[in-house]
Image (tube, rainbow, N blue to C red; front, side, top):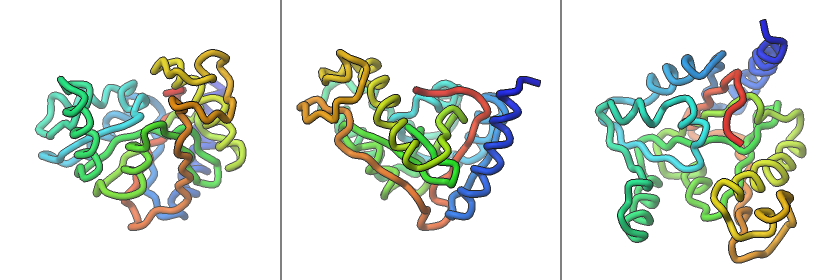
Length: 211
């Protein structure tokens, strides 16, 4: 077996138990196929489903699978105008299910996310009845401090390239702690505990996903 897969599985068990201590639901899946199956189990028929910053969920094929199911998709990429896009983003805040990823996780069970617009972190904090986080084990850091550092110095500059943001990190690939009008690091959220219990559900995947 691949040594990295073995390491991911062992770290995943530790992280899963620590997440449960913080009243999150947590599941470990060896690969994308198992992760997709688990995610579909957690989304009830007829639910309204929105997402933000969900690259990992896309990579396991979740959005494609949901398009074939009896759910209401709040897909802002289908919006025909900026106004419709904004309306769909706001509807996601009261969706039955919200899908997202993690910029970083600490091994003791805390999640770090950074946003430019704030719609994703807003939905994580409050609104949707169920939040499903799909995260590859490459996002897991030993400490919270390292998780914050990863979110700011790895995930944010990489996402700046992905979205072609006109901020300094787009030019240099490094965080400048900027105050640019196009800053991608306007909100930094640490989610350290789940209330009500079980609202946030983690699907940890023993692969490298996302940025």
